Amino acid sequence: MPDDLFNSFMNGPDDKGRFGDYGGRFVSETLMPLILSLEAEYEKAKTDDSFWAEMHDLWTHYVGRPSPLYFAERLTDHLGGAKVYMKRDELNHTGAHKINNVLGQIILARRMGKSRIIAETGAGQHGVATATVCAKFGLQCVVYMGAHDVERQAPNVFRMRLLGAEVIPVTSGRGTLKDAMNDALRDWVTNVRDTFYCIGTVAGPHPYPAMVRDFQSIIGKEVREQMQAAEGRLPDTLIAAIGGGSNAMGLFHPFLDDKTVNIIGVEAGGKGVNEKMEHCASLTGGRPGVLHGNRTYLLQDDDGQILEGFSISAGLDYPGIGPEHAWLHDIGRAQYVSITDVEALEAFQLCCALEGIIPALEPSHALAHVMKIAPTLPADHLLVMNMCGRGDKDIFTVAKHLGFDMKI
Ligand SMILES: *Cc1c(COP(=O)(O)O)cnc(C)c1O
Image 1 (cartoon, rainbow, N blue to C red):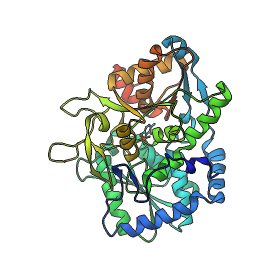
Image 2 (spheres, protein in one colour; image 1 turned 45 degrees about the vertical axis):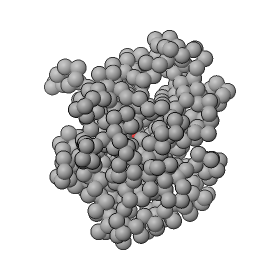
Image 3 (cartoon, protein in one colour; image 1 turned 60 degrees about the vertical axis):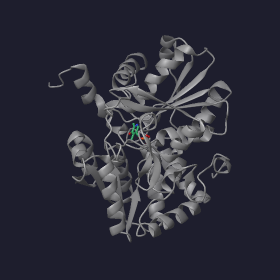
């Protein structure tokens, strides 16, 4: 590395961090110098072989990359159409794709001489990944988490504490992910000298959306090589679930220039994309506005107040979406659909029963869309879905919905 990824004409953003009308850098003057020094450091790292050598060493020996590309034979037979492959990123250390990105940002933080890492987390997966890598490098770690989420996600809070992180419950606003991100940004401005802000998805001011995408792109780069080895050609369709959009961007980005590859992002449809906003489908059910330093599609009311989304999956309920997705949506390079809680739960159970894989509820949304379209496609159609997380964290939620009594 670095490789052809960075020479792609779809490389965006422009020098102001804009993807078409989206992205950019809507931050206060106090934050600007921090953002600029981060951008300068990342620009240096991007073309520095020693940076990528360190990433690859850790991806290989600490995370367990490359993750397999697995042909889901029984699911394929059951659906009776396209050949379904799963990119097994749930096998990564800490159980999801989040650590791909966290490693990149923490190596960068170490290069910048920062000793204190802060992060926001919703369901807790990004917080756990950040606490993990901080423990590995002996860095101080502070995680902002909405007070409501602290209650809902107790096992992940305990994990972070075991790993040595300080978890700060955020009570402002509705006490969820959006508010945690606001408090993390405030902390960053106050503790400029020693602190690095590690963002968990393709959100935030430039350069975060592009940088997080670049770190997650290892997913799509591996899929290119693995599909070439398995089938001797590129896949026909890529499908991934979208919260903020980082696992999806990581799978999609290395294929943006390949016009034969269909790209589909799956948003959380909750109880249905309706007037009551009981969903988290920012592209399907929101409109453009500014949040957390960038312009993108947001769930908002008529007055521009940000609304809390709703989804069975805690990892998908961010009220915005990465600005690059907003752009790909508008120019028509990618298609965005939504899947309801009920559909995701069905896909979750089918995956357990047919493939012996307990998926997280987030990728269950992607899988539910695979179930819809695979039967309509020919047998030589190659479909890849990103299995971006494992379901251990979700078994209590699923048990409740299926009416199982978990008490022993
Ligand atoms: C955090 C998380 C997501 C949502 O984040 P993206 O940035 O959209 O990838 C999806 N799946 C899993 C398993 C997660 O942990």
